[in-house]
Every structure is written in structure tokens, then in C-alpha cells.
Image 1 (cartoon, rainbow, N blue to C red):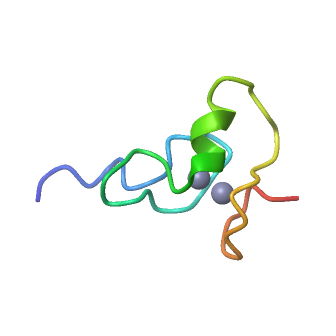
Image 2: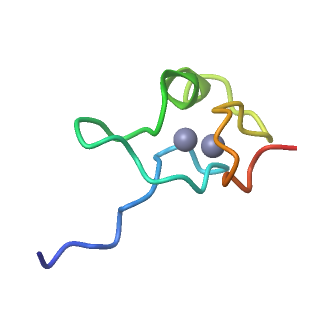
Image 3: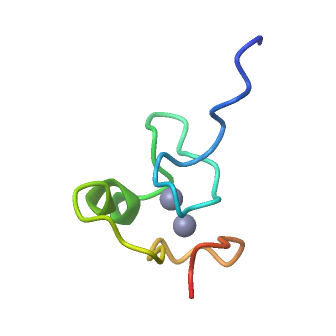
Length: 51
Ligand SMILES: [Zn+2]
Ligand SMILES: [Zn+2]
């Protein structure tokens, strides 16, 4: 309960919460870690990294 800092997708441009079993909110973000993109393609409506 102490570590609440990283409750966010590991994709820097993504603002979504990660899946319970992973560090990313979606497979899209997981793939984006290799190619630094400036926009997020996860498709979540609340994501602020999607342009
Ligand atoms: Zn996103
Ligand atoms: Zn994400």
C-alpha cells in the first residue's frame, strides 16, 4: 500500500493506469516502448497521450 507512485502506464506519453498484471495499459503501449512515439495508440478515451 505504500508504493502508489507508478500507477501509470510505463509508456511515457500514456496517462492510463496499467493493467493489473502488467506495466502497460495495453499491448499497444508495450510495443511503443521500443519505438519512442510522441502519441499514444492505446485507444483509451481518457488517455491524454492520444492525438
Ligand atoms: Zn494511452
Ligand atoms: Zn498505455
